[in-house]
Image (cartoon, rainbow, N blue to C red; front, side, top):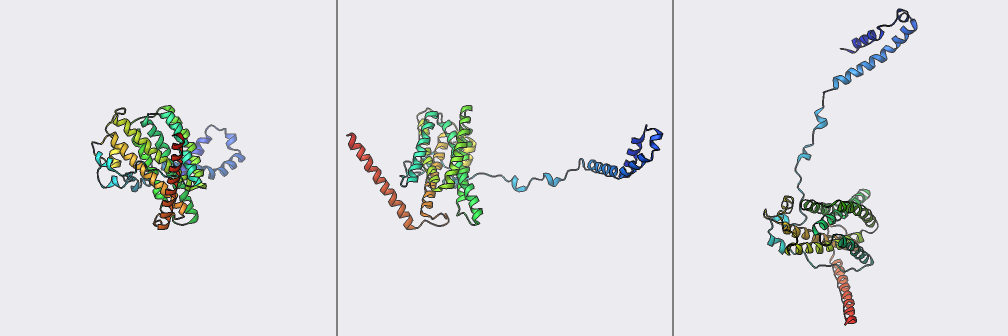
Length: 335
């Protein structure tokens, strides 16, 4: 039915039942004739809409082929990419188990104090519940890398220059911590109270760390370095609980086997070893980032100058010497 016939039909139906005297009225005839073009447009539009019903443009719902490609997150350590590691291989990884960065500047001391203060409530709340501690730890540990990457991304856009390679590394760090969380979620489920605590802590930590990174990125990275030192200590305690039989050494979840390229026979203990190795790398990386900012050599595409490395090494030796003198003084006092 075309628009003209539809208009005639509408007009004839609308006049049924009207008195002859009203139909004969010149005023009504005039107003009706004037209204016909508007009615025609409305009916035509309605018919056009009805004709479009059931007609779907396939381009609207076509999924880009790139989104269909499988994306597999890559582990952050090269050790897990080259080969499938056995339990013995994981044990032999050189992660610097007792490595500790001595605080030198005032910012370093602030960072260490902040981290030590954060550990106190965590120890009181979780105690020996290492699986639940790991879940809570990773929800917070995945924040700094993302915050740093966002801030540096925006800075790179404002200054219209390369970021020096930081954004990629920081995003990879955040993704790695998120994979830790997804792995632990396959092993245990946090309680409602723990979920509420995580939500509150994450919100506070995100905003505080964001401000820290805006005003003093050097101290922000030092905080992360010290946080990762504590993470290495926590996962070492986790291993002890497994070895002593207080935590069951279950088969490793498939997500862990795929991500860290582990043997099919891998167990929970192997996963803890792999996660601890990742945390050790984050520790070293963030301390390195803080040093680069101090030396004003932030382009990761360039090596740190020899003089810069010697300067950092000398400062560390002096700090360690001072701390040893303080400890000796305390020991002689109590002797």
